[in-house]
Image (tube, rainbow over all chains, first blue to last red; front, side):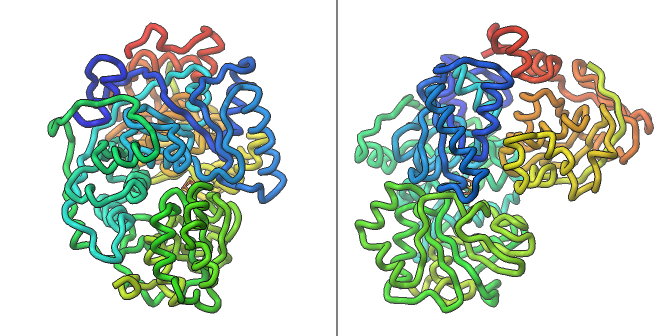
Length: 417
Length: 173
Ligand code: SF4
């Protein structure tokens, strides 16, 4: 059976199959400042529940509009703080970072867990072998208060990655290639499980980009089995596997998608949708007004590292804004200590605090009508980063950094050889 | 539980943003009713005025894609939509709709043959959808008992208030 089935089977103590509806204990549940207000309403107004009853694995994140860009957000944040205290939800306030990043690096989710988040990119955390899925506010409220949810076991597609990534090609390019192939509804009702020899070379940072982008193929979940890379990552941080899955099963998958990654080149998803995937060459005539390096897709250490390598002793082109936002405080400290922030500031970048901000058009770098951005985020729908007539090209941090230098969508390979 | 109403035919890939634009989200904090006037406004102008209680949305593939915004199914229910029939649903939208008591039905034929204005009748318990205007009937797989109980009771919070616990206390899990 596929890994997700194996996790649920182990949790329930009996085998489950795709399509089964089961009720499971939730090992971690979180919501963010976009979805938490409705969680609060469901608990207090709709259910009329009393204080201090949240399970001890319930978390709130202030990450979408953080710090508050307007009074409405400030009011939401204030409510979240009050509720968190009264009900016993652990709050990650302004500055901690983006939920999916923080739950992984703080060890709040660990391999073998079943976790839900009131955010569509929750499958990101499957990169460390968690069965994770996005839910709405009512689900999150019920999981926080009762510790249980119903889940329908998805079918799993095995995505097999072969070969080594060429220089200047990142896991974001694998993800964009996949979305271009299967299209935005290609994994509807399914989960993706990543396998194959390439994984040996992919860090947890890179893996989280892959699982993150599965949401853009409408996957319900995405997962990567724990291997030596993941075990080393866990040991370095002193985290333990939550639920050991002794399983090596090649049966029980609905489909297989092989990807020869050594043949990939730097890609972008051109507007207006994430499956409109093109090579950098095809769109290199497009002049760029803004570059954004950050988000739960690509705001991690190795993303900022590659940007710093490319921008070292270079300048962001006159007339281009290049915004860099580390995805969490821990990442911020790390890139600061390694000198990357210095390099980026010298190059003309502006450093934002850990926030979703620009990714979702909330604050810290919105686009005006007609403006074009290259962003390392995961969505490029009309209006996503600002005005409805602005355009977003999704790309790897390497492509983004090269584009900042050249002021047009640019190939990073010449800066990395 | 029988739902009968006028069909509103929509296409493939209707997103939560189509249903309610993200830019209105902060208004919801005070009053979800205020947002109701914006429901589907970019797909059907003045939809909230034109819709009648019990009407049925018939969509195509991947209905409700996009963000985890639960305001989307809540607002459809608030303006009177009785059910949504579609070829497929985005996973989070589907869960949200069930949880708030808006029946969502996956169908193969009905979305192809229905047009706006047709009369649609759905028997949620038995899993039969009829386009009354065109005399076409389709059987779909009925809901598991627990999900049906959530829908019949108007959503999971209503269920919990009425019975003091989750519908799966005597669970299938
Ligand atoms: S960074 Fe963007 S995609 Fe990720 S959680 Fe924040 S808003 Fe969502």
